[in-house]
Amino acid sequence: MVNNPHQLAELGFYPFEDTRWAWNDLWSRVQSQAKWLPEKLQWTGAPQNLWMQDELVVSHTCGWPLITRLSEKVRVIGALRHTTTESASHYYRSVVLGRVDGTPFDFQGSIAAINDLESLSGWISLIAAIHGPQETWRGEIKISGSHIESVRMLCRGEADIASIDSVTLAHLRRVMPSEINTLYQICTGPLTPCLPIITNAKTTDDQLQNLRDAFKYASIDKSIANATSALFISGFDALELEDYLPLRSLTPNL
Image (cartoon, rainbow, N blue to C red; front, side, top):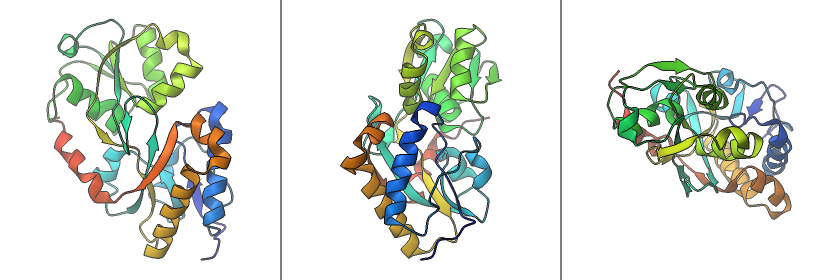
């Protein structure tokens, strides 16, 4: 397998500046086991722009667009295991935060801050947590554009509730603790597979296995333990598209 200088790799769903070094360290260990990969990650701030490109070799995606519009256009490499309280194996739950305390029932009809309408953790999980799976959001929604901005909207009193990816929330507890400490944990979302790591649909079976082996190796490499700890990573599991298809049972009634 030969390195293609036009290949693109980005792991940008947790784009905190103070942990970029850790992602770069992780990638260096992945690339050491798959020399045909790009030597460095790119950081565009918009990994979703890669998903449909022929040059895609590795990217994060979200579980919801994976099963709704990418299923025939990419291959799933797998998912990282995380060490957050809400994580177990390659599964995790989002965390529903409120501007005031209350029960899930209290927030039916409230104003929700949504990072994106294609977000499993920020939108689909919120509906399931507050109203139940396959239900309808019965209040107003405001699109924030990111989990971080959803938290800020709660703090500014512009929204009542938001559902935050639990790994993102673990990072936010570090970078904006005072804001997080003013909010209330209302509940958690449904248990879902962690963020899928994907590759181009044209990736061969041999390349896919090489990618899976490389991520497994890097995720438990003790020489970069400081990096994996900073990223809340404890391992990697090879997964298939079929591991994400049960998410369709959460499809809301919009």
